Image 1 (cartoon, rainbow, N blue to C red):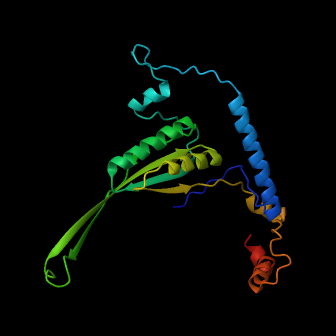
Image 2 (cartoon, rainbow, N blue to C red):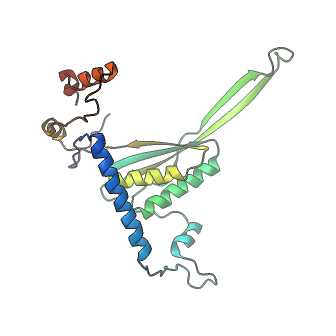
Image 3 (cartoon, one colour):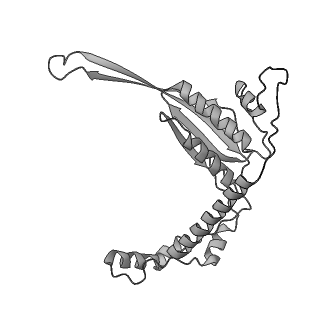
Length: 228
């Protein structure tokens, strides 16, 4: 059974020329530099909240919460926006990354499901020890793959991208991440695309390369525009 979800957010494809892309990147770099300078020149008041004030070594609340289970935010609408699956041969490292993902999601304001364990995959491989002297001797290898899952609800796509990129940045090498992201569009999404008349980049203008000319011909063909 396929469940369709609709949302009032619409996205219209817009293509940029190389010059427009370079200009946009330069503007973004200047804004990032200005933001960095503003942060360095601004004096922030550091007043961390303490969870246990009776301890001799007081710690900030976000550091002390590492001793407890990750906090989770309640769901507002229950719309699934991302499904993160974690796979690894080492269950301890997998639980560490899952715990890290839940804590990151809490501080980003993403309602998450608890770290749910899925079916464990077990495989047995039997091979011969050697092709000659020990050809009749067999050797067994047992491989166990642990699977866990986290579901994200009711969040902005940009926040989900930030959450996934941050997890992927600090992920362990032996933990595989697989994500399914749900996209929400309006009912008039197809009409908006047809009325937008997207302009393709002029990257193939003035080229005599036969491959480039063929690509340009395909982009301007009516058959290609039907599938846009």
